[in-house]
Image 1 (cartoon, rainbow, N blue to C red):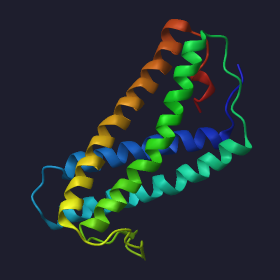
Image 2: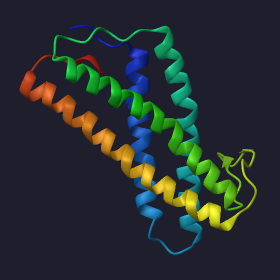
Image 3: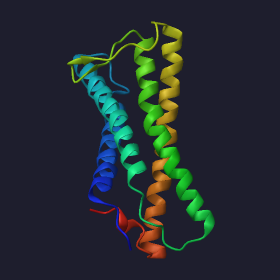
Image 4: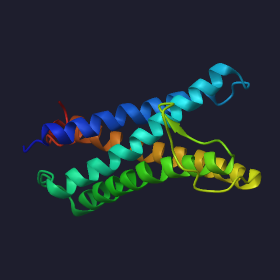
Length: 172
């Protein structure tokens, strides 16, 4: 079975770790009362989000220049489902950080990447819009989690049921 290259695998697993970190941080600070620790965790969450946003564009560029290995024989619907799931994951890896950035802007809280580089506010301060964007950001988080679960379940199906080597293509 053809393997993905080292760069593609690095992007894949790095994105997995960053997305897991973003979820973990959000889950941790979600119910906390306002405190210096909560603000620190929110900043780390933002930094991870900005990093995901930057890396997804590098990953897409790499993908455009380096075709993935051919998929093994499988029903057409499975190939189509894999294609749609991958496209949705890319879409959400872009949309999720953008909604967070828009939300921060509307809430009047500038994102300062790693505490060094302030990102421009994309919207004027608007409390109601900030609250609405917080809902969108939270909803998108659950949707992307659903697509990630679908992706993982499909990989496990290929590993344990089909035993066709699909999952092995992306393992280090």
